[in-house]
Length: 314
Figure 1 (cartoon, rainbow, N blue to C red):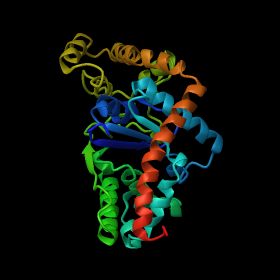
Figure 2 (figure 1 turned 45 degrees about the vertical axis):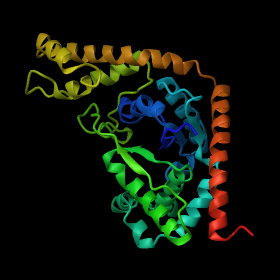
Figure 3 (figure 1 turned 120 degrees about the vertical axis):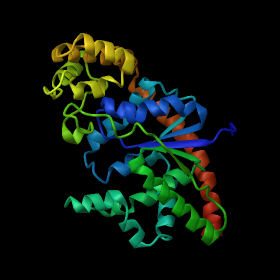
């Protein structure tokens, strides 16, 4: 052990990333992962609650690895693995499901939101919080970085840990959330939260032309001298002092300001894009294989203790 606290973050392989994903998830992880004993889990089994395309899922898994490495994560300094490569996640989730009442799971935000929208709330989505609890607790995770709207995920993990510890004796650490204030506030090209579902994104690893096209499509508010939607995105790339001078100099020139934003995004993205394009599929497979071996070593040891305590080990 390094003596550092263990941090775990999980992400679903959901496809092409945008700059909202970068500032909301990738950058916060890159900025802090060296301070912890960090674990980065690709939640491929979680994604099956909504993604039913095996070709897309395989592609997305590889893309996620490339995204994080290109953004600055050193695979030798963090455990990067696929959830499906460690069967102990599903085993522990089942044990937790035998400890929590149905009514408790019915209060999960994701489940209630799906039901409210009239979408299919499959059994996997209903049990989702307990698989997430297993993801976190298997590794004696102490810190889980989440947005304020995801705090409940960690609360469910603490509840699962507490119920198991009460029933079978002290076994699991009750993790704490690390709230990432930036998550969920990156605006899209229409001023709403940037999201693929809204079609208002600026691609993170798109070409220079793709980025420029998206930026030029930002909805502008002609009621003032400063295009607010452009400015709210631009402040992610430059300081307020720099922007004040720029926006004063080009007051009312919306096209010029959009071009300046596109240039600033390209300056940040271009080196990461070049690094990403150099990562081979063979390298991705090796990163995941190495990560799976490290993750299994931790998870299997934990499950030996759990099996003994619940009574299935003779």
